[in-house]
Image (cartoon, rainbow, N blue to C red; front, side):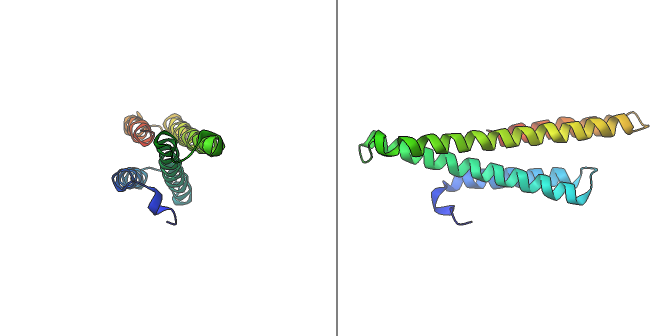
Length: 133
């Protein structure tokens, strides 16, 4: 990753662990492999982009309060990074909604009681909710 220097190592490690958890969840998920790869890519990109945007935002805020940068010079940049972090959050929420809809359709199509799929839905809600923290 080209922007590693921007990220706090503990936060980056936490995001990488969440991505690993999500991949493990997808490995147990009853969906096509191509769809799982797309979901994993969306999740990974959004989570890492959000982290980078928040780190740059935090750095700019720190520089403003330290007096090394003035708000007029960095305010526009700060706004763009906050917007980027919000966009990434929206992508994660849309992914969560899409996966839940996929599971609901699978439950409706299942002739069994669907309890395993409902467990997967609860697990997916938990994993995707954790990604946004």
